[in-house]
Length: 396
Image (cartoon, rainbow, N blue to C red):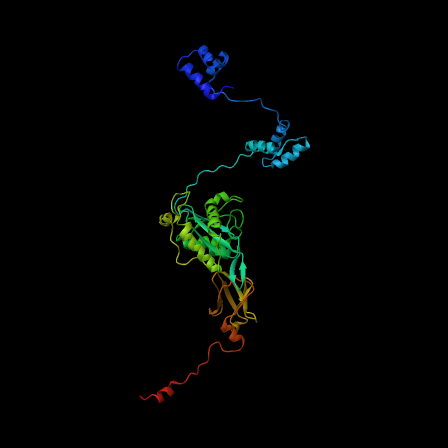
């Protein structure tokens, strides 16, 4: 076969310099027919050989029929079906052919480039740390992190919680919004059970939370992580940049390190997609967002109970003491992320105030309640003397 360089030289000398075919044949040592063919060919010479028959050829029509019936049928299943009909070829040639043929029956999803306006949306997701979090008393516990990311600035925030229940997730959303410093128009979630009821509708708790803040909501379609790719990529960055080679003293230390990482790393870097620093864009975005309310919606879990003979309220496997003098009376218990408070319904008095514990199977007793249970006065008794005694001792 004639080399490409030699073919180009023959055409140049004949078409540009006007050298005859006879002279080119004599100088190059090629036959006149070869020179003539090279000059007449507008395409460079290329090596080719006749297509060899494939073991797949007799089964191509059957493969098309299988794909037409079910465009998502695995190639392994196709191989099993045609093997029954006598196919003896390899796995690779079948997989390559199915890969080329499948888009004709199941066109792949295409995407348009998304542009976010300032303050338009904030995407949320749940990240599950790979290691359990220390919670004191020698215990560790599986945690969940509510991750938020604004679409325009790519500024993010995160909050550690220990369940997927609505009170915890709503508290995590509120904390993320406080860290971001303003309210977006829409909160984007996947179909997490605590916030999504069914059919694209929110749960009552999530609807009440959004209504109190005056923000909208949007739920992504099932199995569609690309719809909230902004927060998905931030979550991946947390997994690769924040979590490795870190240790935590307790859950408070975890949250503190996470906040500092967002301030110094995630929100302070030059974001590869937007070619800008999220913290700087956040300042611009806040100008287009509504301010936070003075008080965020209440997210503490509440229930009413009658104080039993053993005056304790059980929450998250832990027992918190109540004032034993209220035995038989009804109290409202409010359990949040930081504290557990009980209020008497008939008087409005606070009858218990405990710091929330995330370790399990503990009994938390207020010393004042312990003294009352033992029959001791809750406060030291001080003798109250009539003022007339002091008047007699002190000269007028």
